[in-house]
Length: 150
Image (cartoon, rainbow, N blue to C red; front, side, top):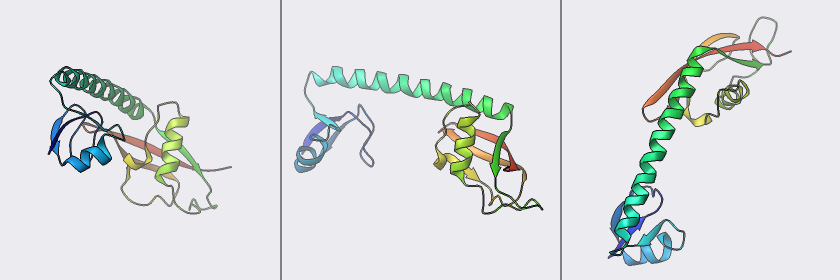
């Protein structure tokens, strides 16, 4: 068994800065060559503290950024233009990718399309409520205004 320090988050194993014990082959053939971990040494404890401090600083910065984006998303509706017929029925549906692009075009910030949750399929023009998970602790409710494209 090998004792290693993770330098990046590894699914099912731990986060950056964690000291874990894994099988020798897993460490030697996968984690170490890909730069996901370094071998644990006495001097490595200082490295663990610096990695944890950097991770905490990034988490705090991303939380503040997510809160700022959530506040700006709640302030004004996001407009999405989609091809529609005369009666307001859309040709197709509005996808999460189109909503993410509209949010970025509005100048609010970039949002991953996988974090957007549509309650049901959007098939007509009008106003809809959409939730966006910006951070583990921050969920923004967005008013989406779907209009017919020219």
